Length: 281
Image 1 (cartoon, one colour):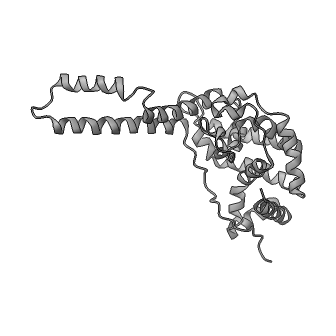
Image 2 (cartoon, one colour; image 1 turned 120 degrees about the vertical axis):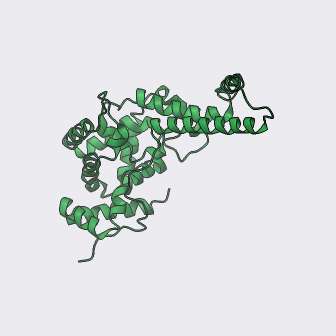
Image 3 (tube, helix red, strand yellow; image 1 turned 60 degrees about the vertical axis):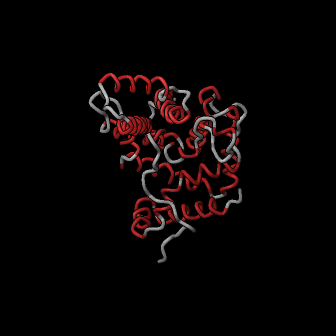
């Protein structure tokens, strides 16, 4: 029996790399220390009589007043990225729903950084989240979501630090959490027997349930009147299924999918991914 294949299966079945709030803040600290050290070295090298403690302290005071000013372009760029991610961690309406967060990680790179929604129409606003979750639950029912919630709740318990805070980066790569998302996605597949008709249906639900633009106003002014397009919907679906898509390029993974979900479901997955690949948007 020939194995199911999907055309042009190029995506890696790996954790989707997305700088976390902590990683971005580490980048900010490292870049600041690098810059400070380089300037201090130049100051030492250019000194003809050596430096006193007061010279170094004066240099530090001057550096903090000028180079760490949030109006300095380089520092401002790093600082704003760190701030945005931190605010998302704090104000994310799904922060207490780990399953939705793990699911969202599948397409998080479609979300715009600060202001980017104004000049790049390939991005998708975070405003889609309430309607997207609603559309998915309408298709598969509440039980798969309940199972996903339970799996990710249990997984999140094992990722907590000493202060009882979830380490989100660990949860995003937790096997049980990733499997919970795959289980939901495989339940979605049969509902896409007519992919473009389903896309239109999802568009209607999502655009009628967009989040308040003020929740994500850092995305840009275009956020105010933004609507999800057919192109955007297809991109979201492509990202949602891309890890499963890659698994179809590996014989052992195909067998594992077929054993777990059935050969028919695996072939339906191939058909859906092929249709998404071929969609002209």
